Image 1 (cartoon, rainbow over the protein chains, first blue to last red):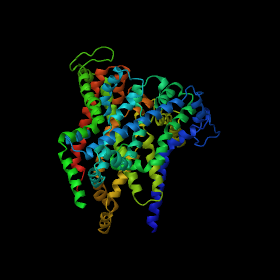
Image 2 (cartoon, rainbow over the protein chains, first blue to last red):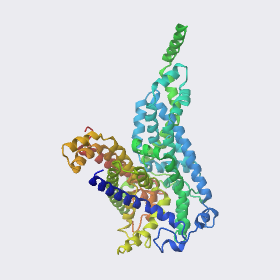
Image 3 (cartoon, rainbow over the protein chains, first blue to last red):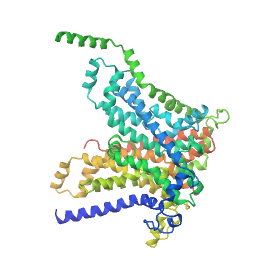
Image 4 (spheres, helix red, strand yellow):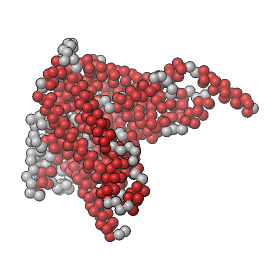
Length: 280
Length: 308
């Protein structure tokens, strides 16, 4: 390595280290604050707690903080898991039909799906709310779960169509010659082969639902069935000016599921964002 | 024996040939049933319903009355509507380009064979995964609190930091910074794009004596311009939709300085239950987004190169 390329490489690393530190500082500050006694959080800007305490984490789950986050995590998890199942169900069926089956008006439907990709969710939010309100499903999890079973995220269908198109057609033909029905072709050939697309879909639908706030805010107003997002928001309004430690501890726990997905499935996330244009 | 197998195959093939268009359609529609129901009720039906509601005074409790264009004329006279347009545009016009520049610069730094690239990329990308959540918004709000760490860091270098969230002129900066902090996903897209640029282009340019500056503007920028376009379009649309951060950090304040469009729409629809008025607002949002997207599409002919 020449001298100038070495110094270039050092400069590059210095800049990258500074950028990285800025990026992770807010997360580290929250993390360290969640282990500090309330009196220490805003009085020092030290990242390392002088006295370590784990009581904030316990308080959030025992009710000592004034709210019990245990059930909220359970509900968030339940809603997200059901949405994943719904997304896999509807997107794989639709994606298979668009990629492999011949029917009229195929082109029209596909064009329609693409057109709805750009449609902001807020435009259809009000009528959907009114419908769910009329049939008495507000304050249940149904409005949060049901749309995923009806293929309302065109990105996932597009992802599936692209993937199924990449599977060699010889396999279908062989299966059809053996007398395989389209349903069996889907179940026994295409669905198992589409696993990478299904994993990507599951990851994104899980963490979008887990992070969602708008939908949960409008459909759930009964604190008994609050999800984590709503619980944190309510906690901040009611106790956010005194119980900082409890608030940060629960905020940290709320991002742990997404963090775990990030650790395990980073490759799928990066590919989903880079090649499919899914929002990160 | 072989002949028998063949006839078997051709019989099946013939049978398939006989499968009528109607049967094919029925099979396909069976697969498409969930999507068709969703399309019909949740997407198209809801769209039409929004258009109808926008011309009524529906409030969820009493029956809807047709009011013609009254909602729209009221919106144009509504000072809060104009305040929300202004603050949203400021937010979009600053945060989207800032994210693009940050993501492109860091992607360029990471594009060379850097040791530990995986770790850098992962840590820089992490905020964009969790940045939209309520938990991070709460942390961000306290980061910029009057006695929060940002102000104590500024204090160390002798700057007396403002009351970020309590001040109408700085509250929007806190929200813009939170958006820029999440540039990681765009960076990942840029990194994938830079990898696609063939190396021989740079080699040839270097042999011809092109400076790094020229190599960037004549090779990297044109090759990446379709990705810049994609990021610009998606970033603009999603910035118009920002909600969680506003709700948690500023609640639209102080003095309506961060009354972003979707937050205002939410207030009208779900705090005051002005469903008709809010539907009209959402149609106007659709029009604004359509206009912005068309501007980006039209100008893209000037600077996006698809055939380098």
